[in-house]
Image (cartoon, rainbow, N blue to C red):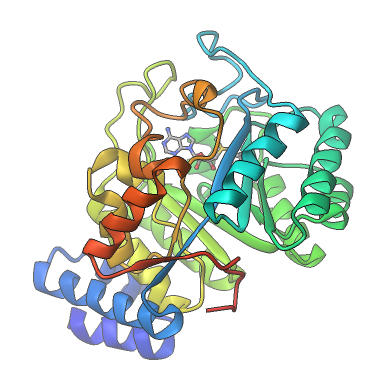
Length: 347
Ligand code: SAM
């Protein structure tokens, strides 16, 4: 029964609600192995055995928001705040370029609108110096006008996880003043403007049910993002969710495979959160259908200040300078690093 659903998903790229639910609830080890194999086969059909790399630059841990799950939330007084200068960011890009990175991901907390000009200037400077590279932004909710200015300045992609598509669950994760509707509106704008757009969720965030995951799957199916970022929730000791349990690695892998079968060409990262929970989490993500990794290119001395959750991995194969090690780990499972830009549709 489950096997036939997996085959149907591979062929038709969609299932009905009850079928998705049966797949999410299945504990049948053989069937789940089959799901991963099918997802892996599809990934290899589209991309070969290559994995795209993105250099992640965590440009600031200042944030105006107070998401209950996040270690850099505004209310966390224990964080030493930093903001990289334009020159520091360009230095990260130069280091990354020399290592072979052709995509830079600028991620950070959500800064006030008055800082938007500065970010536009940074994107323009990267675009001037690295005309052959893709620039991905992950800087949260901005006005449509700002998204347009950033796009004009040379940004190509934007990552904005919706976090949950269920209103009640959204309220459980965020304080009043933040709104799911606003987040979804931002995603629509990003797509309309022409960004390759990414959305996604934390798997196992507090209060998440199978029905919530179903809503997320249906939203993602309809929104058809070019990138899907999913990783397990991991608690941070200085947040209201300090004592919550981490999300399930198995469910994360299952969702990676489902998204690959739903959307064969999607750019699907094997996330740092997965590597943080399991020493071979990154490789398991790739074997479940992921095709992107995002090693950390931030200045070494600031990495410990960008702690979204406890024990966040940023060294070894998770670090840009550990590319050789990453190469070896991927080779051990039959994959190689691609140093192409790796835009959506280029597989
Ligand atoms: N401020 C931007 C935004 O809101 O999209 C980008 C930075 S935000 C820290 C990046 C992502 O980190 C979030 O979308 C969230 O899914 C993830 N994240 C935050 N706290 C986490 C936690 N405790 N466990 C796992 N992922 C977490």
